[in-house]
Length: 185
Image 1: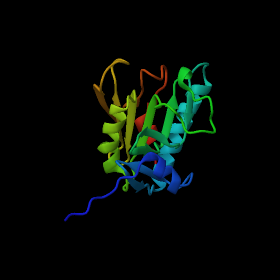
Image 2: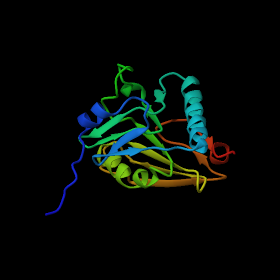
Image 3: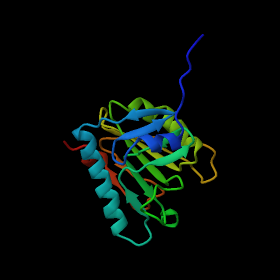
């Protein structure tokens, strides 16, 4: 007789976690994020850059640091940064978003990177996320996955930006951030 693991549902996950505990639910298993200082520095730089871009013009949406994003019954993620386009900003900022953001950013943490580039990327894609940035401090690069059209069934554009290049997105018209600036130590 073999034992079978029971996967948690999103509702069970919410019942056993607390806000800010740096946990997420990946394929029914609780995963703990253990970020280092570089993680927080990268997160802060990206947040500041996108916030400055938002503040520079009307109708540029809403950016937030980690919040739970329920992807499906067995996946609740805490992306390091989320951005919602102007027409998609959640009405109730005291609640978890009820829709997938327009951009999610995951920053390398030793404890979660394998999920970010594997299971989480697949679920984000299947869940309709328009764009995903994977920020890799080990290679000083950003992997951007996006859909070329809103109705594309999958990420059909994959770009890697490294030092000497600039991070930009068609979703954020006029936003640019130098990769070297992002990874300044």
